[in-house]
Length: 107
Image: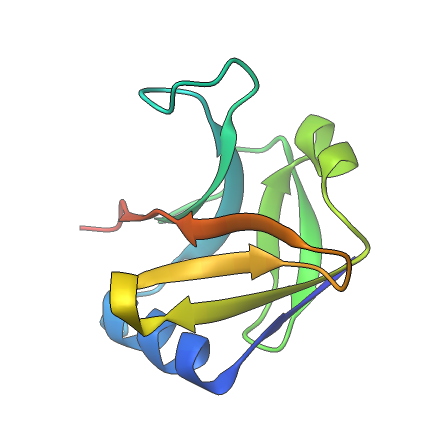
């Protein structure tokens, strides 16, 4: 599995994490999303929780819960949507999340 960050997304990721050490993690968030299965969300965490697999990327490894990796595609891209100040997760076949929320849990 591989994720390619475009140039603007790389710039925003570095800005939003403020140089603090941590790990990006894709999760299926089902709180307040109005859906039963959840929606892909990007977190920045201090330490892995222990149940993750790794997705390679041009920003470094991205974590994802092993049981949720089945819902992801082999090749994905993260872009930055300037008008909404959000990341977008997409594949060659379509968009997984057009306006992906980002939570920085590293204090």
